[in-house]
Length: 144
Image (cartoon, rainbow, N blue to C red):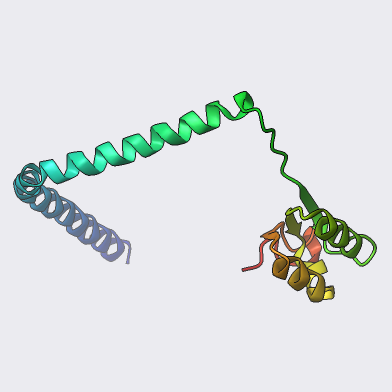
C-alpha cells in the first residue's frame, strides 16, 4: 500500500515539474513577441506614461500645497450612526448651514434606521461603511 502512495506522489511531482518547465519555455518564446509589440507602440506608451506622470505630479503638488492655501478646508465626519438621538439634529444643522459631511455608518444601525441614511444621502452627504457592529458577535464586520 505504501508503495502505491509513493508512486502516485512521484507521478504528481513529475507532472508538476513538466508543467513548470513548459510554462517557462512558453514564456521565454513569447517574450520576444511581447518585446517587439512594446517597441512598436513605444511612442503611444511614452505619451500615456507622460500624461500619467504629469497627473501624478499635479496631484502631489496639490497635496503638498494644501497648507499654503489662504482658504482653509475642514472635513466633517460622523461615525457610528445613524441614531435617533443625534443624526436628525446633525442633518438639520448641516442643512441650515449648507454644509456637507461624511457619515461612516454602522450596518446594525442602518438596519434599524434606514430612513436617516436615505435622508443624509438625498441631502448630498457622503455615506461610507464603518462595519456592521463594533461587537464581533453581532455579525459580519463588513456588509456589501
